[in-house]
Every structure is written in C-alpha cells, then in structure tokens.
Length: 272
Image (cartoon, rainbow, N blue to C red; front, side):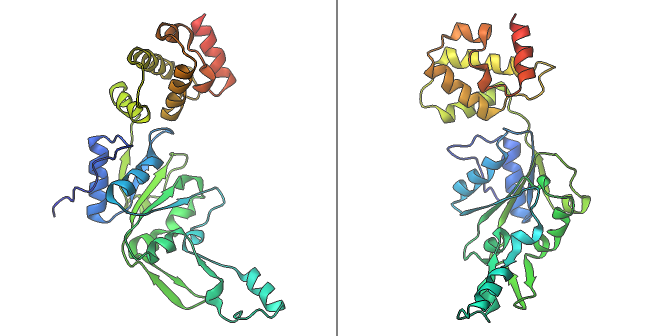
C-alpha cells in the first residue's frame, strides 16, 4: 500500500509534518481521523483546511450535549405529518416527504466525496460514539419508516474532534486514526500568526510572543490563553499603538488573553 499524499496544509493553515501524515494515513486507510488537543490548537480549522486543500465540500456536524447519533442520520417529522393530516394536506401519505437527512446522511447522499467534520464528539453522552460504529464502518444506515437503506455513494473523509472532556469507548477508538495536536511552540506559532497578518511590526511580534509564552507557562494560571486569543491580542496591541518595550512590563489589554478574574489577579501580582 502506498501512502496517498493528500494534504500538505493550506494557505490559511500551518500544519506540522506529523499532522499532515495523520491526515494522509486516514485518507489512505479510509478511516475516521480522531483529533484531540486543547482549545485553540486548530482542531476544527483542520477540517476546513483539508476541505480547501482537496477541493471538497465541507459538511459540519456540531455535536452538543443533547445530540443523539440518530440526529446525524435522519429525522422523521411526525408532528408536521400529524398537523398536515388534520388539514388534509396533499401528500401526507408519503412518509418520505417528512424524512430529513442529518449531516451524516447528507454526506452519504452527496454525489461527490465530501469532508465530514464531527465536531466535539465528547460533548455528547457516552453512548453517542458507540451508536455510530455501524454507520462509520459500513457506510450505510436503514430508515424503517420508508424501508430504505441509505448507502454512501462516496466514502466521506471523516474528521472527528475531541477536547478530551470524556474518555471515548475503546471500540470506537479502534476504528479511528488518532492524532494529538500539541500546542504550537514559539517558532511554529510565529508561522501561524503571520497567516493572520499582512504586516506586523517585528519587534512587537517578538515581544508579544515572549510575553504570551511566559504567561502560558505560569504554573497557577487556570485558563491558559489560546492561539485565537493571541491573534486578538496582537490586533489590540497594533490598534492601540502599544510600544513593544511596554509589552513584557505591563501585558497591556490582558483581558483579551485572560478570561478569569483569578488569573487576572495573579498576573497583577506577578507584575507587581
């Protein structure tokens, strides 16, 4: 088996060599790619980058605490059918008219291969991943109301993200290619930041990155700032005309980086 070189990052997404290889392996093996990592490491944006790089449509299934696996397959709107039946609406006997495919069903029915993002799978209950095992393995599901089997016309490229809030079942993990995205080091972060800015004062960038990583490494910070917060902070520093030499001494606009009162209080003590 030759590894299909499918993904090399994109114009807007800086990917490590290990991450690019994980995507390529998942595409070659036709298995879901399970991505874990702390918030701000680009898990969700990865699916967008893969979609862009491969020229394929992206379908996003945002998982919530109330989400059931059935929601991704199809929904039978029995309430609307009863309502239409009361008023004698034409076509009420056609159950198929009241079947709406979910995001997984939409990916299966697509005439072209798509990228399917199942985002934050660990937000749902523990049975959610197990309830998807058959569908992700066999690429089909059955609709008993219409006695119809929906089979994937093209196996989608499935990317699943998790914030590691819950442990996922072993049976589910066995079916995935797994990759953990480490938080970028300072050198890689500089590359990521430059994607977001056409021009940025070099000294300001250097001082801001030094201060950002110093802040992240403080042992008593509860919620460490993420990449998106760094980008926002750099925009605030540039817009505010902050001199680079002030950054390490004052951490201006600290509320852009830190979102908890306790953390801001700890920072004030550190700065004296």
